[in-house]
Length: 307
Image (cartoon, rainbow, N blue to C red; front, side, top):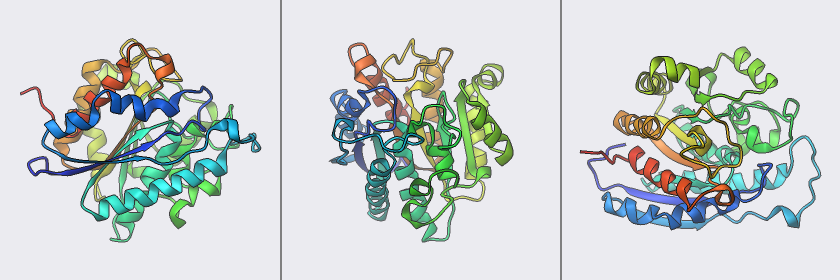
């Protein structure tokens, strides 16, 4: 992405509250907007278009029929809409910024990006910044919550409603997939990660090697043989000391500065195709602190510098 040009940014809200076990994450897009995202991007020199929110039915209006993957059909339907909007956005030479909502929305975001570049006979990569690997399937998930399954679906594993969104699978190959910040991995996820050969940088790797080295290595992996990469940031990547407003807190996460540096290096790469921030849950936040951080990290990923 060339930050020297006045780039058009399209903000797409997805108030998804069906994939998570705790309520409240549907308010995430509103919290991020209230924290000043649109105005901050405009000050950074972008032409900002806010498309509003994709309609998502609340769980109170539905029955949880599939106990292995709750609200699967409804999540797939919303992700189908999101994928179409993302593909259209890229076709307009605009840059998609997706704000959620739980992390199940990544199935829609990445499907849209992958579909756009597939038509051009190009592959994409993905950098997954998250305390969790989100690579469960309905068979391995201990909870049945779909926000723990999106990366598996994008790799072609799991429920067909998600794996074959936009009519093809997989959306991304294992060698173009990197997870950063993992510190809570289920047994079934660990087995699938090893069998597929997916590169995971745990927080132990970040501690030992430093976020700068880790993110640079990740960028090289997901950029080799691809048109570029989708970056998706689950706010629980950040330590809950800094970002308390998430549904699934895991202590020992990335610091404020580590997260900024990761976003800054992603911006410097010039290879990011789309950006997504998920899992901001105002019900667990303090004075919208986590949403304000989300805005800061988006700005860093889109080129904002200290100097």
